[in-house]
Length: 459
Image 1 (cartoon, rainbow, N blue to C red):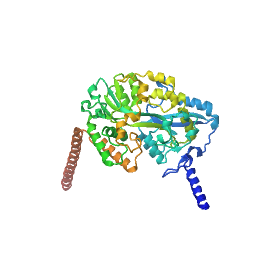
Image 2: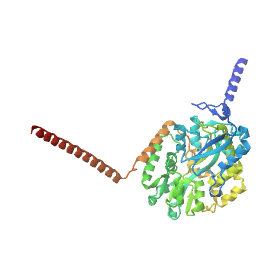
Image 3: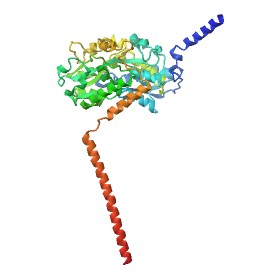
Image 4: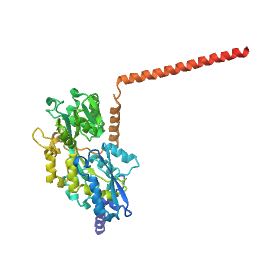
């Protein structure tokens, strides 16, 4: 009996020893820990830290804003250089258009990025595929600034707080131009505006499968994380119906097209809308009544990183009050950082946004008073047994392949006008006819010359 109890105790101790983030392996790939990696630098060496982020998604020094990358370089070279043997830091910053582009580049290219900022479902996917370093987030001196509602089980994509540190969060809605779109067409605040034939040629759509298909799925109350291919096919058919009405599939270009009034309707992120509304007062925004995507973007360290320890220092700096306030103020997205939300400077800056809603609410209220659960109340009610139904989840391989195929078919179908096809056929026929005629003439001439040579020879 005692031996049996000792065996049980030993087994339990082994189980608990693997509960910690440090020893946890995912299903296919052993977890790579930043703390387990060694590093060696030479005094005076300049190390390049490669940061890969969404476009228009950091305070970069333009328009009187703070340049947070330059701030980090100065801070590191002054405060942390000695800790790493006297090195200096230089940040190399580049951008991507969407999660899928970023994933593809890291998955299929021999690249080295030190910090990336994917969305929740992509973090879950990359974590499961062994593409992210795990690290001790509690060791970050500024980690206490992150609100509890963005940690542990609330962060379904990283419940052990091992792979990511929240950067921003928000929801998707509809941006429209009040001088072009009739008030009657927006009074019910529906996704259906993106299918309104009245605005054909003036409608934009996301240029990535997850967000584009989701606009149809939220509209019709379809589960955005389903593995049922028939449901995805239904959403695909809705996008096929929408395609003739579109001006184009775009991502970051939505910002410029809506701000320059070259388009009238687009689905996009509320943070970007607030930035647009500063300079274009004809733009308005609403959260669709049928529900909308709630997302969290977070900072991660990919396993292709050459400097994971320095990446941790960068992440820690970005959640410090000065950097986090600068970023939240400049990019306009909601912040999961208590130092931001409680900052009087931040609240004052938000009051300067041009946005004023139909109920008199300002930018701060639009970001923080419209909680995702309230916006998605009716949508969530359709899936009571499913956790976070408004958030995207990582796909299994079969579902991902099916969605990719649908998206490829959508982009190809009807992409060329009929007159282009007719013209192409006529050109091909003309080329073939000319080639055939040329061969005939050459053969005829060849026969003529052969006969002439025979006659001359006999003579």
